[in-house]
Image 1 (cartoon, helix red, strand yellow):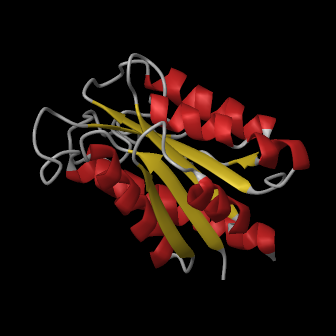
Image 2 (cartoon, helix red, strand yellow; image 1 turned 180 degrees about the vertical axis):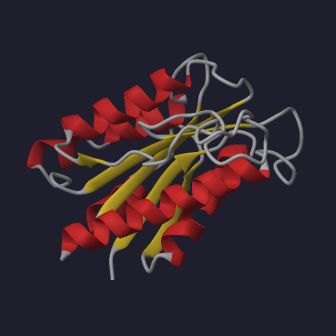
Length: 192
């Protein structure tokens, strides 16, 4: 069984909802999943670093704040320097997700920051593998559409100024579940 660690920060709970949906998809696809929510940039990152060390795949998540990852996820990245120096995460599967209030809000930059971090560790990146939400004759990117924001490099979701119980939308949650399942399948195939 593949082991997947989902390491994320969630300021208001919306990104945590996405992390849980990604985890459900990975579990449904047969992976053993640990979800680690980072609380602040000054915390002890040792448990999260150990989870990444012991995983076959690591999925990193952050809200998009001011066009980039949160300070908390960035602090975690910087705390991983010993793993980088020893190549501890080399050839592990990596993926990333982000959530924000805006439909775009420079989410691509956030995903790019996570991607560069993974590449510096020598990890193997996996994107969504999903067509755009308005593909195949679907002329809408309605909230219930899968991959309605049409990201491929990583998972991007959007939340309104409402409770995490109601937003992100059902389509974004399903996109997250499919993303987690894909990462679990790719990880299992590579592990074989």
